[in-house]
Image (cartoon, rainbow over the protein chains, first blue to last red):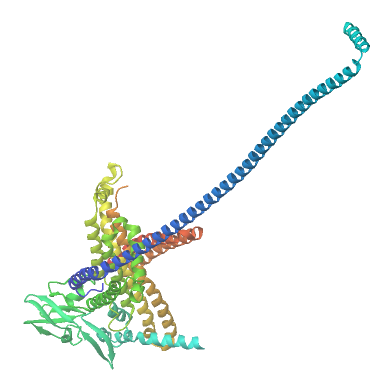
Amino acid sequence: MNIVAPESLIFWTTIIFLLLLFLLRKFAWKPILGAVRTRETSINDALAAAEKARLEMQNLHADNEKLLQEARAERELMLKEARELKTKMISEAKDEAKAEADKMVAQAQAAIESEKKSAIAEMKQQVASLSLEIAEKVMKKELSDKEKQLKLVDEMLGQAKLN
Amino acid sequence: MRLTQTFIGTLAFIAVLLMPFKGTASDPHQEEGGGKFDPKELIDSHVWDSHEFHIADWSGHPITLALPVILWTDNGLTIFSSAEFHHDNSGTHVVEANGQEFVRYREHIFYADRFSQEKFQETSTMGRPFLYEDRPLDFSITKTVFSMILVSLILLLLFSVAARHYKKNKMAPKGVSGFLEPVIIFVRDEIAVPNIGSKYVKYMPFLLTTFFFIWVNNLVGLIPFFPFSGNVTGNIIFTLIMALIVFIITVFSGNKYYWKHILTPDVPKALYPIMIPIEIIGMFTKPFALMVRLFANITAGHIIILSLVGLIFIFETAAISPVSIVFVLFMSVLELLVAALQAYVFTLLAALFIGQAVEEHH
Amino acid sequence: MTGTLAAVGAGLAVIGAGLGIGRIGGSAMDAIARQPEATAKIQTAMIIAAALVEGVALFAVVVALIA
């Protein structure tokens, strides 16, 4: 055993160690551990913030993408509607025009028909009056002598009987 | 070529470093041996504590740093310089102080009138430091205490520099703190947190102080020249106090589960007469093993290195010195590892015991 | 004579501790080879186990020295 005087070492070791513990605790461990912990917290915070920012960026990006998508869909829809509208308008216009044309044709036909009828009626009238005149003239010429008048009456009577 | 030069240079440097050991070989102890080299004396003179700090020998005359001798005598406190013994360790040179006379025999200070060499020789090696009826209480600043104070100052200096760095800026550590911070984090993350758990914060100052105090003391003990080479951690009283502090902290931070585990262990009642004594003995054997482990490891390392150096003087030829020096170099590097490892093991086991004491039941 | 016996006792204790610590070290190596990712945990456990074995050996050595 390498001991000169146990009491000396017991005394001094205790004193020195406790004093060292006290001094280091106050002047070294507290500030160092505190600083280390603060730094670790700040690093963790910074990392968390970076992660958050990254996520936000991602969200933003996704939002943008979504907006773009929506806008594109809307444009598509609008284009489609416009195209439909155009088609509809054209077809309506076509229908209308056709209807109008039909109507006009119908009217024209009706007018032609009536014109035709009136023309035919007029013609009939004229033919009738003409034939009356002709008949008058023929009658007047035929009936200029009495014989012929009587012959005609007879003939007519004979015909009338036949009828 | 360059490598060989460096190697020879290193060997020469180490040889120079080991010079003080050669000096100790002709220490006062040797006078009794009659000039013949005694490896036991060489080893003792390093491993032993002493009242003065031996620096070197100059033409047969030892150069020492005299340390204060502080005695609690029958007449009260007595202080004088150890230089007054004039390097005498044979109990012949009488020093007068405070109206009393003292002699020093093999580093033990006795009252001159009560000292008897025969009685000392008859006492067993274990009992020799405890001859209190013949000697005053000795609170001297011995070589070990001097080393301890030196290490404390080194630690205070190192860590106050590091702490100032942290106060000044919050940037990444560099310089002293850049070296110390990983070690501090290691103690926290590898020793304290896994063994103690969430309550580790309270014990961090103790664990850190213990770790660095033991580590630096181990390292200082490996440096073979003044003002280092004090064998603090290889002193069983030092390790006893350290282990005692661990024991006290363990007992005082023990919660009800800890005491329940000791006093009413989870075994059939019939086994209580065996189990409870075992648990109670276990409370004491743990710090006891802590004490002996550090002491034995450090002392063994020093003894091996000194024995290897002693080979040169045992064989009385310089031809053996290359072998001796290579082995000493190897052992010294190994001891550097052991210095850190034993500090780690001591702190780890201290944390483990504290962890067992504060562990919540699960 | 007692001194010699004590030295023999201390030597026997060292043999036991050497075997024990050797086994612990070997098993730890095996475990690390099998699970390299658990190296840190295995090392800690190894050191604790080795320290316990060493503690027992130190008791024996101390008893041998005192006796």
